[in-house]
Image (tube, rainbow, N blue to C red):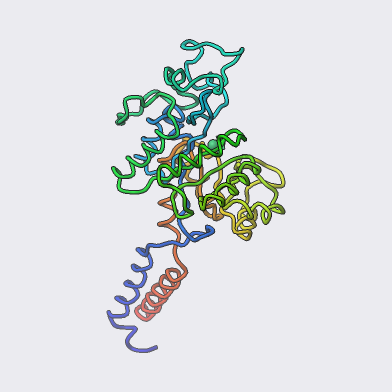
Length: 343
Ligand code: G3P
Ligand code: CA
């Protein structure tokens, strides 16, 4: 053994390499583009505050989400509003304020002025307030228009110093909705694949139509086809959209697995899974880790804070191959030095 291994410099080299490895940053996740997985605030911070409200979107942004997700419906007078259901009664006080129209509560039977009289109420684990958070907007619990959601995202982006993305979902297959989504996005400066906007739908026909309209207008915004498509259809789907949005709760042949995500990536489709709804930080972290480890490119989460924390820990914890080599070399040199000293 070379005498240098008896010297303090041996220990210094070994310790330095091991420490460098232990403190090394920069992980390369197994996502389609190697970037960190994105966090999408599913219906806003819907686990904490009423879904699809300015308050919920703002809280999610404060929690560090990358995108906010407005599901979209059309009012009777043709305005896009952020609402999941085709009806108003699950999430608002329409029953007491406006009553039924044609025997029901379809959004499409009420004008925007009428819908603006309603208050959005919490569902699930949501509450009417969140400790330590005061919404910045006077109508924070009213049904917002798509315009208002975008205005919030852009204003909050300036405030928090990062670009908050918009992830609108066409909830009905309707050419008018397609046109209004595109014209609204263009009016606010979106239009390119490099813009932080993704248009989603469960209807491939809707997405094909939006793609055709984008092509005609010289637009190239990303699109996502929701649902658990068969892997055998990925190549065809990839002709029209940039990614898929499968349910992580679906079982069977098209359940989201490591292999399913790999197959999507092989077709050049990114994968944004929905819905991450575990409120327990420990079990939620394990769930996020599993899907991030499989290379999932993004998650729709009701608890943006938990998703952001897990994502950030995941990125910090995944060593690069060079880091492994550094760690092994450091411990190897230390081991040799220790053997020399005990003889
Ligand atoms: O858009 C992804 C996810 O939100 C789909 O589920 O029903 O919450 O719109 P849903
Ligand atoms: Ca949605």
